[in-house]
Image (spheres, rainbow, N blue to C red):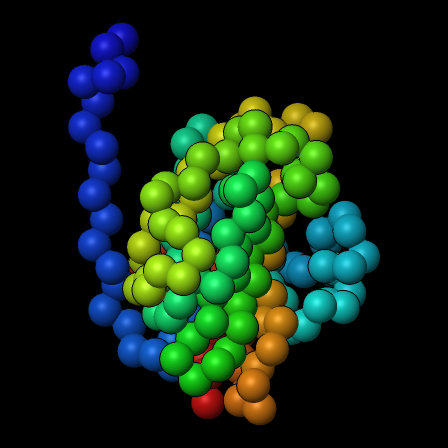
Length: 167
């Protein structure tokens, strides 16, 4: 009733090392091949995993320690570069750039900021947007920088689930 009195949730960064990749939030890992866009489903941009989230005001978190190398003003995508140069792209939904930011809210981080795994980056109204869009959320290794990255492919995840490793 009195939404302005609602206490803002505070999230502490996760205590992960620089070689770990965490979940983007609380949900499920789904087969990447099930994503409706072939660019993602066929991993044309790099090794990828996909998440399924639901709810209103769902927070998407930084999956790794590093630098926020890109954040789209629309909130539908952001990139992180780890200390050892691995580039990670997070893309929320398919064709959601069309929304011009509707249903997305960036949470104060800007390009060039240092981030820790578990830092909140974007809030998304998955329930509202899923009526029109495939809201699969992809984590893509766009440049492994000569490192070996392994990613977990299935299961229920929480914000602090480790879903990948950099070797």
